[in-house]
Length: 384
Image (tube, rainbow, N blue to C red; front, side):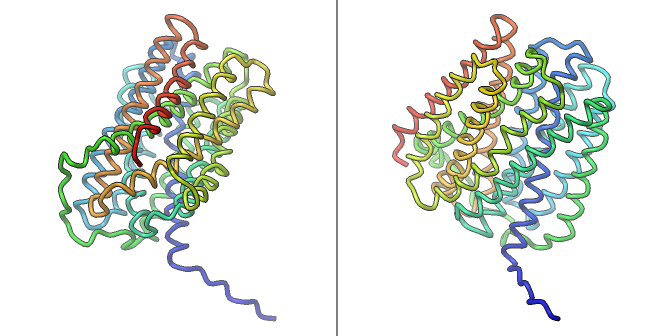
């Protein structure tokens, strides 16, 4: 008996390996932020110190994305950068597990943020080179990242509950090392630049419409980073166990698997401005209900809904931005895009940590729907 041969196109293989790298990178990015409340309790850290640690990750993440995006336009083998990022971020995260002071954590938070910053500008630049601005490919690739954001918190939550948070940082980086090695073996010349030096970015790039797109994307990162940093704090105050907190975080990102795929499909069929404006407005509305919820049922319903609409925004933001930028400087422009978004997103946990310390957590969460509504206003005034 013979079986029909299943042929997999080269493009499909490329999408699989890029998606695997995205899956691993996004999972690694999330490890330190979701365990900060437990680390803070163990090391007796204040809310402000927790917020500063989370902000340090995001600031270095934003700076790193610009640097690596710019550099990726000026080397031939961009895939080598992706491999280096996966390996170095794994090493950095391992070191968190053996740290024993706030100073060491602060240094490592910067290092983790910087090393995990490689993938997005470089990986998305390679993705754009191979697939253009196809919403479906971007949606599938984004969904893979969401799967990482689901699986890694679940694993981290159960390891922490059964053993301790330090073991999480010693075991999970092995996944990053394995993915980095596999990526190096399989990518070969994937997304190589044709020339070493690309067109320079000039000030004409920074138009009002481009800056509006970047700001709107930044509101999405503010919501995602602020929400995932202080959601564990809210759940801890409600006496949720570490494993249950991991499940809730996973639910938030898990719905993103569907949301990013649907968002990618919508991008190919509907107006980008409409998709972004409606999604941001609904997210703001849901956040207002979530803030004062204490019932486990309502918490999970609003959490899943917020996660879904945040995920829908992601491919729409990416495609809207790449539609308005130059293909030959894609790494640099994506570095600017993710970098500014990451930097502004980094302010959110710092602001929320300060407000929580001085007032309360519910007031701190109000910052998030306000930024969503600001994004809606800016988007409505944009021509794109």
